[in-house]
Image (tube, rainbow, N blue to C red; front, side, top):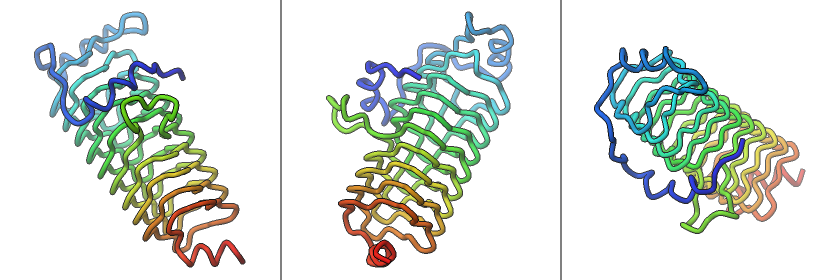
Length: 252
């Protein structure tokens, strides 16, 4: 996927609050009518629409334009959003449990306290605030959530997952360089081959996680928990505050 640099540059200033909507609020029936008439050449125009607090569960949005839509507190459980550009949408406390978000672009978005449990976000590119979000048992394989250090003119833009629940999530091959994961819960998560270079993981709980061949080089790991984790081939070059138990395990 190609993600426009311009989208990144305007992402973070808008992430912390809703953008003004330009259209009247729609209900579920109206959204369904728009989706029924849509195709790839003529997508349903939901751009910057106010869709707050709606039950839109189980709908197929692949032929929709949701750029900048206000989706706060809406129910999109089990919806199909595969491959969409969701840049600058507002999704605080949204419900996306079991939704298909594979290969999506999500820039400049607040997903704080969102329910993404069992969602498929594989291959997605995300620069968003996901603090306190529920991503338990989600498919996050091959995600591109690392900070783009070539494009940081407005400060460090990265995925923020402070206090997020990623228990049981599949993060195999995930790119999470410089991601914010303080106090994140990664119990029994699969982080095989994941790149967490310079990630901030103070207090993160990785009990029972598969960390084989993962890269924690330069990561900040004060009070991080590795009880029962698979550390075969795991790299900790230059990691900060590495627990003694991990250091001992690595030298055996």
